[in-house]
Amino acid sequence: MGLLAKLFGGRVPDKDRECLRMLTLTLHNYLFNKFTIKYGPKTASTLAPAIANGLFGFDIFSEDGENRKFLISNKNLVFDELKELSEKQEVCNIVSVAAYVLGGLNGSEDAFPPGRINGAKVLREFGILLPKESIEMPSSSNAFRLQVCQFQRWTLLG
Image (cartoon, rainbow, N blue to C red):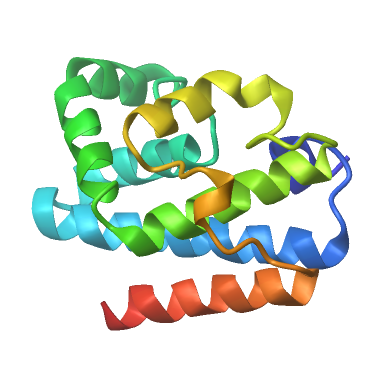
């Protein structure tokens, strides 16, 4: 099983896998650039991947070694950044779409695969994971790809 299949909970159709890969890279780059401006590259290199993982339903504080120590000792910073992201409608929309697409790929009507319930709960608490009824769900892999491309464009222009 490939890295993305492990990351996203099982067999992922090729088109959706490519969209998720593009979205993962786009979110990471967006966060890294945002955090580099605010905190410098060293902090950004720890904070960006942790927050990006959190946006896909993983535990933000699951990093190893020094990165874990930094994140735990700076929980308020992590939570402040999540709160700030909740004000970015574009981020909330694409994260929500990806969460429900991932849930659907794993046979669930809910967001994310079952193993990421806690991550979904955290994202809901911060207002990042939106109710399914309030977002435009893609009708196909091509529609999902278009949404990811629009988000990429937003990160470049915004």
